[in-house]
Every structure is written in structure tokens, then in C-alpha cells.
Length: 317
Ligand SMILES: [Zn+2]
Image 1 (tube, helix red, strand yellow):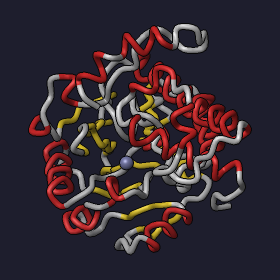
Image 2: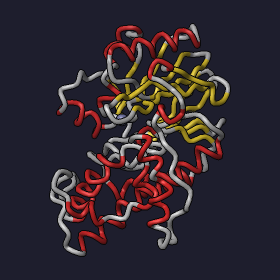
Image 3: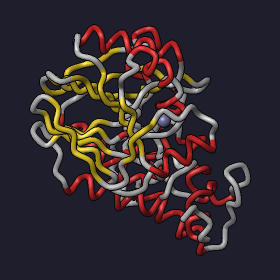
């Protein structure tokens, strides 16, 4: 998204002024450039609560750059990493950061999102910490096999697994499908930190290329019902107060719900959207303020096409 689009926010808000469901506030941006940051300012990380670090590196596209996030949990019996980065350089930077944060070895790696931008660098993490155990869902394992990715996961969590390391309880939870179909959430009940991976892409238009739109809504609601204090996104900034992170999750959920409702409305009206590239329905869609969220231009027709597939019963069972 360009600065010009941001400038257009006020105008768009006026145009949709008649739609009461949308707030007049412009949607915030996940683009690092809009926050005065450059790719060279990353990676960076911060301690969310004692011994729990949110780690950000970059996903760079010609149109925008936003963060790809990992979670690093340090205990006296080793480290747990949730989600990685996309390539060798970023994986090695992540390894270096873990070593800087703690002398403890990496014990577990949770593959919460199976997409390339989160797993591509894992072979280099494995090289640095050969004893680490990788965990994923059966669904993600299948996806990674189909994508010809190195299969590092040796343990499966399809419902729930609790790790107890050095007195820290770490819950690995499958709360339902959303972004990938194999989504895992990691929750620390003592500090109420929840790493939501790509079920929460903060200030970004819901990326649905492999999504399950209606189930995604239910999965996020399940996560919210657990009443986490800190909700950490898989993309988009991990910084801000707990209240801001939560408010932006509620906002993101509204955008996912809008994909579902606009998809149903336009499908019922008979406006076609057979593919993201051939989606006349997208021109008729009212994305409200989310038309200005980061990556909206590319993601909106993709999400709509996916929602049409859901309505037509064509999504993977
Ligand atoms: Zn991603």
C-alpha cells in the first residue's frame, strides 16, 4: 500500500459514511514504512512478559513490508520457539537472537503456521539446535509434504498438548481451522500470553489463500473466550499495549467476518468470482475501512474467491 492510499483513507471513510457498521477511524497500517522503519531495523524483539519474547523480522514485497513474527519462550529447562522465518539469513538471525537472549538450548519448535514464510528457514534452526523437537498438526504435515518441504516435525498435536518446562506451563492448542487449516495456537496460562500465528494478521487484510473463512471466525472467537491478556499476531507489529493488541484482534476478526458476509451477499446476488484474477464481485464488495488495511488490494479478491469456494462446498474437508 502506498502513502497515497493512506491519504485516501479519509475520502473513503466519507464515501462509506452511510454504513453505520464501520467506524470512521482509518484502519492502521502494518507497513513498516508507515511507522518510519526500514527493513534494516529488523530483526528486533521485545520481552512481552518475563522470559517471553516477541520476535519480528520482515516480509518484503514490492508494495509493502510487514513483520513476520515468532515467539521465544525461555525456561530453566530450555527454550520453546513458535514459528520461524522464511529463509537462511532470517533463520540464522533468529538463532543468533535466541543465543543472545539465553544460554539455554532450543528444546521445542512449534510449527503454528505451515506456510513458507514461517517454516522456510527451519532447516537452519535444526542445524543450530539438532536436538530440538519439531511439532505440527497432521494437516500441516500433509501441507508441508505436498509443498516438498523438509519434514522436521516428529511430534503431532491435533488437539492439545501441554509442555511443562522449568515450571512454565505451555499449552499447544488446535482451536480449529483458520488461515492454513493446520493452525496451532500457543498459550501460557500463567502469564496469559497467546501466540496466535496467522489466525491474527494485525492490520492486514485477512490473507485467505488457504483459509477456511467461516471456521476462522469461530476459531478466533474460541481464542478470545480463553480471555488471554496478550494476543501476539503472526504478521503485523507485536508492539503496543495488551489492550491495543486485543482491540486490533477484534478489528481483524471483523474483517474476517466481513469476508464471510460480503461473500454470502455477493454470491447470492449472482455476481461471479471464480478466481482471484477473475472476480467481478470484488468491485461490488464493500470492504469498508478494511479496503485500506495493508495488502488489501491483492488479498481482497483472493479472500472473496476463497469464500465463494466455501459456499460452493469446494474447500478441503
Ligand atoms: Zn505468513
